[in-house]
Length: 284
Image (cartoon, rainbow, N blue to C red; front, top):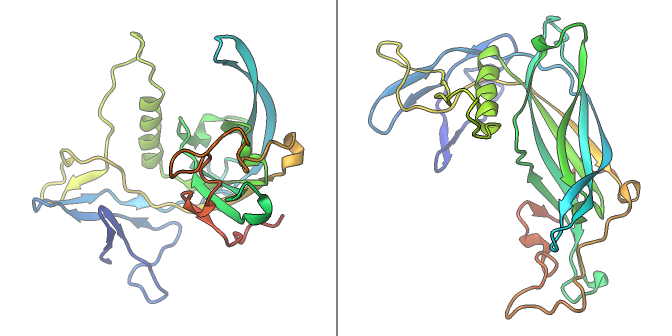
């Protein structure tokens, strides 16, 4: 066993070296033991680290969606809809795979502190994508096929795509218990409150009391081990109609007192997740 170090409020982590007492390998199981602030000892059920199949190919389609404008009229807005074709069989065991997709976007933005791009600098901005649903897949639900195509993200075409855009897809392997946990999360998120829905129940955790093995009360979350594979997909501006750049701001848009009329046009490094260094995966 190894102790986790507190990296920040509520954040605990450890970096495992070559000589660590714990080896991270597929096929082995892991668990987490916690001492709570009131002295309770709780521990998770052992979770297997399962191989994830190679992440599939990402693609997109351009679609029009209805939008209500300021005058209450229905207009059309351009969207980009990403999808992924993914294998659902693990290569080593030949069994149906369960996995979760998480997403991240990286885009370029040139600021213009004096309303001139010549005076600006180029920033690379990376942000996690908080989608409105959980992208969790159970390969056992698909019969007669070894791969599926699934939608993963849909967003309006805006200035994020005006200077180059990468969508990063992280595919995380899941055990049966971890999939069931995320599936419960998905059902809670997707509830719309109609009278025919089953009542919402408590989302089960895999934490148990060390003393007697009973489920730990008032403990939320689920510990699991995962293997991750990554795919990155580039969208060139000219391929989706060359969206308008965000900076510089329009001439008729004066800056507010002691402010910038368009953040982050005055200083792109102030945007969360911004950096000047080109990411290693950016090849365009």
